Image 1 (cartoon, one colour):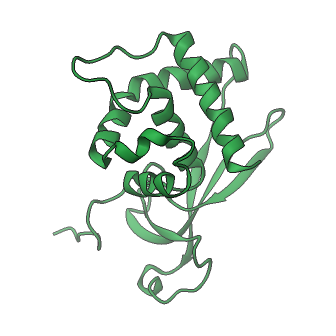
Image 2: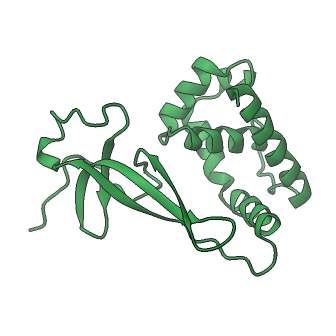
Image 3: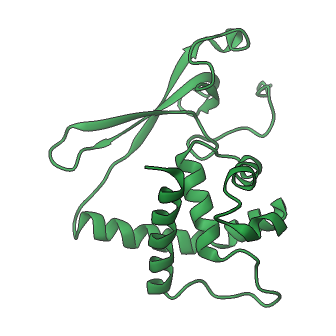
Length: 186
């Protein structure tokens, strides 16, 4: 599917769900330059493409998708990030509505991810395995940083078999520390 078609499908779905849910309550002040459905679409597609940082998402969409989102040229990063954060409860409501429609009543979906180290953390600077695909992450179970990727597993539509995907670790997939290298405990 071409990127423009994916953006259109996600935008239409999000916009329809926003209208059905009534939309978020508006705060006083000037109207945002980007519509709520545009901000949510940019976040969803950016995360799908493995762009997890708001700076990187904004940079990518300004460089490659300004035709689809012309108002993005006049929005600064902090305003975009605040707008996206204000839509937190709206995004959860849309997710609940889509999950209910997808699975029906009583359906449970379990999705889990686990770190897949490409090499030992000390050798990460010179590791050439999965160049361009691996990234730094933090494994909360082992309580240590790693260099590698993430494997996401979930049940298939029927039965108990699982579908697996391979992706770069993102800030939303594990708890990340704010500074590198990780601090040592005293």
